[in-house]
Length: 305
Ligand SMILES: [Fe+2]
Image (cartoon, rainbow, N blue to C red; front, side):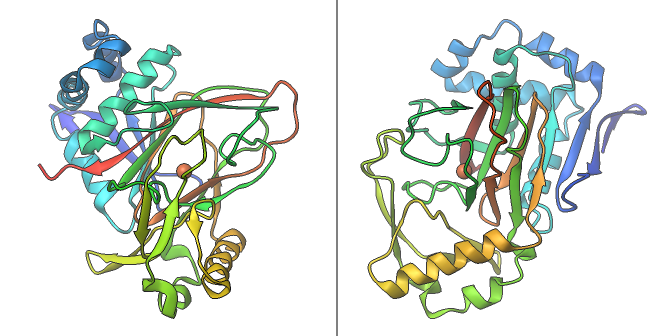
């Protein structure tokens, strides 16, 4: 919580669907001031000029009383939570404002990685009734299995943002979320002989990803004396039946975990997660020929300064 004088500028509550997440409610007047303060900065400008992205973060932090950045960082680094939702609270439905808002959030905690799918620091993508896709990302009627992001790139992927930009005729398609410490089979899999085996992870050859990296990494690792996971069923490349079975068993265990929560995100809201100990996926949508959803994503590393 923060206040200047006596009026709080933002307020943290427990997320109604997943107890480990926070929801951050912003003071409506402050949020208005933020959009007013950055209205002259267009999206092209922040795409071309990296320091402008930090200016957005600086403005948001100052308008929210100066300690907003510290609060957001604290949540994301806190092993017991590591995630929150936040939104524009109905103040705008301008997609450029959404890009600016999510950019301010990301630059409060670190720096986004280059996104090969868009060739920018963020990517926008849609999900529709029919789409020719080479991954499950845009296939609406399949469950998109739990995974972490960035397993197949040579960059640290500490956090991710998903923001809902638009939605029509969507039933289902909720974000599926699981905090690693809520996974009942964690100990079994992290103590398995293959837990420290360096698997190959790659998306090489998938045109939509536009990433040719081949990365060798273990499935589990430790950070701050706590287990972390790298897992993505679509880009792990096992070399044997045993290696394949280990990842297949992990995926099946994750999918059937009773602790996976389906979290709905209103248009204009975003979710920000610590990617080292949160898994995310997406539930299948109900069939509808007019289904349309557009999301924005950013992934990146934590600032050391
Ligand atoms: Fe993802």
